[in-house]
Amino acid sequence: MKRLLRYFLLLTLACFVAETATAQVQNYKELHKVKRKETIFGIARENGLTIEELIKANPEMNEPGYELHKGDYIKIPFPSNHAAEAASKTQQPQMPTKPVVTERDMRNREIRVGVMLPLHNENGDGRRMAEYYRGVLMACDSLRVGGISTDIRAWNVTEQTDIQKILKDPKAAECDLIIGPLYSKQVKALGTFAQANDIRVLIPFSINSDEVINNGNLFQVFQNGNQTNQAYVFRFYQRFKDYHVVIIDCNDSTSTKGSFTTVLRRKLDQESASYSLTNLKSNEAKFKQSFSTTKHNVVVLNTSRSAELNVAFAKLNGLLMTVPSLKISMFGYPEWLMYINKHLDNFYKFDTYIPSTYYMSPLSPRVEHFKKKYRWNFHQDMQPYHQRYAVTGFDQAYFMIKGLHMYGTKFTGASGMVGYTPLQTPLHFERIGNGGLQNRAILFVHYTTDNRIETINF
Image (cartoon, rainbow, N blue to C red):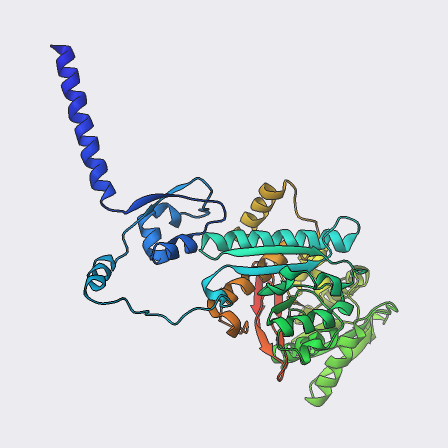
């Protein structure tokens, strides 16, 4: 009797499970086994779904860090309009509802990305660019989760490489985006090739070339030194036009920062702004005379070196001991971001502003997640440069690929087009006349007197 009761219970349970499974199957069309290189976007498109419909049927896709893997099973729901479509097919011939998409239209297919950089382990350039390339790959991986597919091809383009030979590879002409080169002498040939094949080129680092002025296919991330100085001075004056500027000569014969202070002095003279000049070796009385007792002072050195900065802080601290009512801020250089461990307390004390074209907050949870993922993927930490090259590669590739996916050949990288918050490198491009596009984003890293760090973006 007990055995019969057990069989009855098992039969009842089996019927219940079968009935439940049938009810669940009715909520989706089929289970799909994920193949290699498939993306959420591609699967949705192949089944006549929107990405939102596919994610709704598979709620786990909304979880942070979700990634699609080969061999996964996902539910393919019925399209929300499948009944109406079936009815229309029986009544009249199906007419196209969208314009025919050409194979060249990258908005509806994978984005083909070529990387033409020194990718080797022979010197610093190669190691830095190999790390940058890893960041590009991580960006592609993140974009894939959002349904944007990429096809990556890379070439090792060293300083000695004849890039013309690389450009003869048929796969180069298939690219939608090429990232590179690192060396100025290769820009002209690559730019000409890009124009002939309607390819966008992202030049990721500083170069000595004016090709961007005449070539509408180029996106140049970093401006030359003179342009950067002009941008820093323009934003400096906006921020400190009511301050008294004190420019300190630090007697550093190796410094290249005289180019900045020269542009700054020219601007201050044009605006009839208040400023004075002094020397790091001046005696206390002469040094004190350079500061205003009625205005807030902002101090600018003509060197970026840590040794002279240390002496300047010592003199300023001594000055405050004799005149504690003085108000003093500091305006520095991007190199100062490397001196945080040594000078942080003084950065806070003197309300320091550091101009830069990149900055990565050490307190950002996104940055910490990126570091862990990099370590997981490549079994090592990023190289200890202040500008983390993998993060630079991630920011630039994510921004460009997403923009091309959204806008195709109409993408210009203008402010607000992509809606991406960078981890380190802000990007917003402006066209130069009838030529290419140049990144105009700069920022000030501000160490406030209440021991906070804020980023002021322009």
